[in-house]
Length: 204
Ligand SMILES: O=C(O)CCCC[C@@H]1SC[C@@H]2NC(=O)N[C@@H]21
Image (cartoon, rainbow, N blue to C red; front, side, top):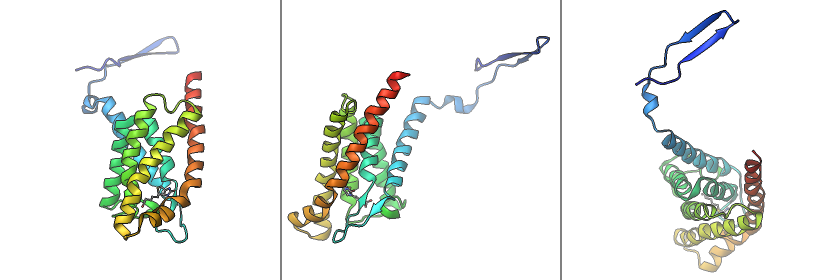
C-alpha cells in the first residue's frame, strides 16, 4: 500500500526535488474516528479529575464542594451520550482502582462515591439532551444541566445514606442543600460556555 503523499518541491525555479511516495506505516491502519473517540473519552475523564482538585470542605458534611459537576456535565454535553457516559465510567473505574483523581486527590470508595456513579448517568442524559439541541441556548443549557444535576443527586444521596447510616433528611441537609448555590453558579457558567462555543463555531 502506498500513501499518496508524494511531493514535488521547486527550489529557486531551477532545481526540482521529488520525494518518493511515502509507504504505509502500521499507524495508518489505526482508524482515525476510534482514536478521536478514545482521546475525547480520556480527556473528559482527565478534565473531571482536574476539576475534582478544586475541593472546598463544607463544615459538618463529608462531601466537599468541587468543580466536578461542571466538568462532568460539560463533558456529557460536548461528547454526546455514548462518549460522555464512557468517559465518566472511565473516571469512576480508574478512581475506584486507585487513580487519585477523586475530590482532593483521593481514590477508592469514599462515602461520596455515589455522586461519581451519578456522573455516568448524568453524562449520558446531558449528552442525549445536547444531541437534541439542549446545549444551544443559555435557557436550554440551564434545563439540561439541572436535569444532569438531578441525576447526580439521585444516586449520590441514597449512596450517602447507605454508606453513613444517615436519614434522608440528614443526607439532604449535608449532601444537597450546601451545594445548590455552587451548582447553580456552575450551571450559569456552562450556560455561557456552551452556546458561546456554538456561536464561535457558526462564525467560522
Ligand atoms: O469523592 C468525590 O470525588 C465525589 C465528590 C462529589 C461532590 C458532590 S457532586 C454534587 C455536589 N456538588 C458539589 O460541588 N459537590 C457535591
